[in-house]
Length: 385
Image (cartoon, rainbow, N blue to C red):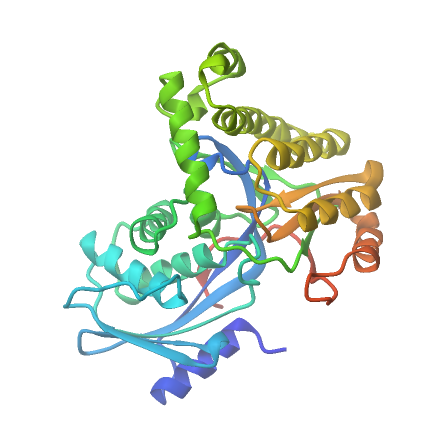
């Protein structure tokens, strides 16, 4: 199978007849715990994965950005950077490119005309952050291609988040872009989404990360994601805190009688999920697999019952993985919800048994076997070697 780098290079040559000046990769991610806490200024614990987006690019002498998407039948887009950059209708891949270019130029970064080819192997709509990976790959590529001083991984991540919030229209938090930009091989990254403090947490060598695709795709630009954010903001206003990161269960219980039940349950998920994220980082550091298993199960239940972002297929998939892992690991839904993937952390010698159980007991809505990935934590964005 052709690698994303080879595919991007081939598409670039198809479009331009020349090899690219530069090639950059940025990984997808899986979140081990801490779901929807990021835009509540809370805490998350993701790791980068081996699946990635690659962009190949060269400078142009004019003010045109020309893009080819190898994974969409070599479809091309073109726009001028010295004119108003507008979004195309819907949430097409082109808008992530247009958004990053616009946001970076608005921030004063000296980007000129650029030819870009894109390819990746992150399943779309899978909860593994293909969009953030693309944004970070584009930002990192522009940094190197146009020699933009002062841009570090955190700043690139913030530019990607702003592009997604303000141009694409999904009010996501910072987690996805930050882990894609700043991930460390062999480590999860505990991220304080308010201060952007990063704390690497080693993942024990004898643990495997298993990601199983439900075959149920989601779209974060849709109303569900933004609705959850509005409900969390309403809860924070009622609790008189800047964000739900500042709330605790006694505060929430004291206001329960004044809250709509849905808003209360949304807040309860965030407050308890923040605590679970702290506890999970400690369990990982101590290689306490029983604590990890319990925390992942509690997180899934909270997402299902309080935040209401799982769907029956995802519930079944997580249950199959947990049952197969037994006392040797834990499983939960990962990502924004309403489809996507389930993740399991299991003892490495049990990984094949978990994968076999998923293949035996789960079929996607299309009637096909689920895609299963066994991963190790990967490094963040970088130039292709």
